[in-house]
Image 1 (cartoon, rainbow, N blue to C red):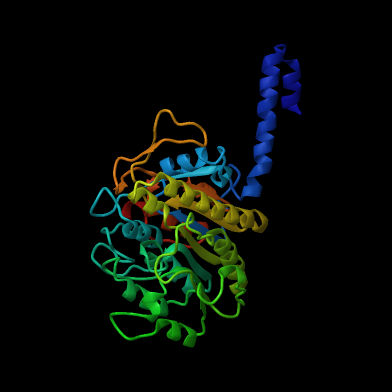
Image 2 (cartoon, rainbow, N blue to C red):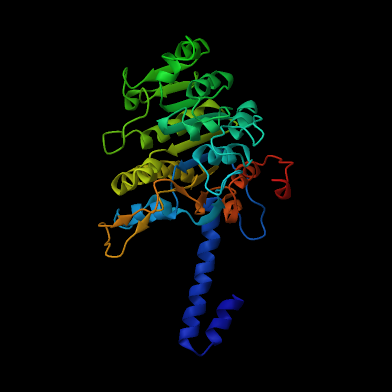
Length: 389
């Protein structure tokens, strides 16, 4: 009331309009904050019950920009109001690879390129998926690569070299993960290093295991009383342009399944794996198409989080791939793309956050902080200090 009376006494109409607009905007922000789960000024961050971490492999601002301008200037990523940046370098190189990058997210440690769930001294580090699984949370992994590829592997496996695919597959028997969807069936049931049939062993452990050859993922309706693994390909799945279309559906299925598996909450990692491959091959069309497919999965996660109100959604990449640039002469929906490398670059990577404790992810920080911030968002104590990381 005092502010409105003050406005009425101001003779200049432009100032009255400006101050009135600012007042209304502040009211709008105050009303909007609880909806997104972001704490109001002076309030402590509200803990999340669930976390959905979506990783675009090889995705940074150039890839996001190219997808945005190729899609009528629209992305689901635009719906995030909290944005930060992480510094993706690894322990032994300014240019990280996916294994070291994912291990930083999963364990909160910088490690050497190629390391899967191990620190720089090749000692296993407990991942956030393993921690939460041991505490009664439901856990899941979804990828458009093999499920034993670097990013998903770093959350469930501990191997000194990322290409030990059969050893990574065997590590799935050591953790009670609730759901896994991705390619790589051959590393489970037609192995070269030993004669184990890991699909049979998973079924003996109680898993419902299915694959692309038996039934389409869209026709699968797993019951929540059994953990679920679905293989989308014998090795790597197709590109989206070649017919792969499961990522948004798999994300939705995983969310629905995991929320029924545990009343305590769930942790889900979803990877858009093949954005990276577009960067490595300097294929702008592949890169944009894979990023848009990934963005549709982001949309599924956001829709659930809005309804649920207890879910933190995080979207980031592990590194930038290709040194992508949008060249002069580009037009909306008609881009001229160029690349500076067929490898990775050291560019900082954006982090988008929505939901309870999202405000923890603003600013600029090490990629290892994503692990610690996720634990903080869940209300977990973390004895490590920033200075020790």
